[in-house]
Length: 288
Image (cartoon, rainbow, N blue to C red; front, side, top):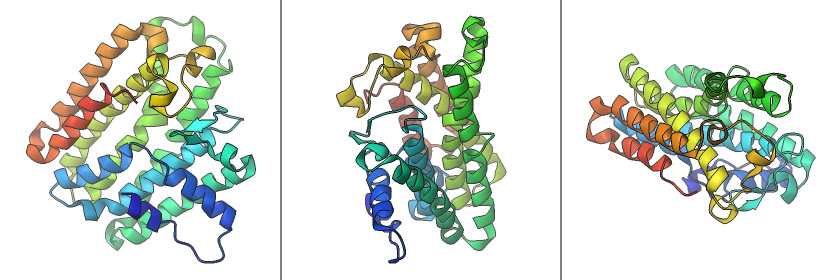
């Protein structure tokens, strides 16, 4: 993926060099590349090829990278480290970081519009736009901030079940929707039918929540060196997470059950879906 991501950042002399450097800093930083992997493997499981899904893989990684840049800003999570490197606003400055995120968003849609066949390019752009918008990624981030900053007065006094439902609603949008879009775009790229797209949506919903619970556990139990970012910050801020609400043991059991649910959703695809089933199991046992 790295060479294709690098090639996607080829511009004319009209692009500001400092902006391009910031975009390279965040898009080419070492990372798990989960979202591109989901797009590529969904295409293969649907009988297509990785090559067909490359534009989808690049586009979802651009949206993810932009979201991390903005999430790390002082006005948001105020983080200094991301993927083992200084965050964009630390490596450059806040204004450049904001513009970097602004530039990655339209580039993602340009990548889909030019990389998908004409008959599916519009639908592909719509899938990604919905996943990245006010009802999904951005909306989930807004609600996450609202809970963290006390803009919702009674969130910390609600019952455990209500708090779990609230967290699931946030993470289904903030994290899960981009996973679902990655899978749907890969399926779309390979010509998957409606039944296949529904199966991948079932996988994606379980996968996304399992990933978030595992991420919460790593923030509580992991190390900065292994994670490549600051850990323990959720507890410092009194933020609602699965470990703080239901405990580490119950959180781990829930993540493992969701991983099994994700794998089961793709049982009808046989061997071509094996990498996705393995990926679902890996996300709950990972150490970074």
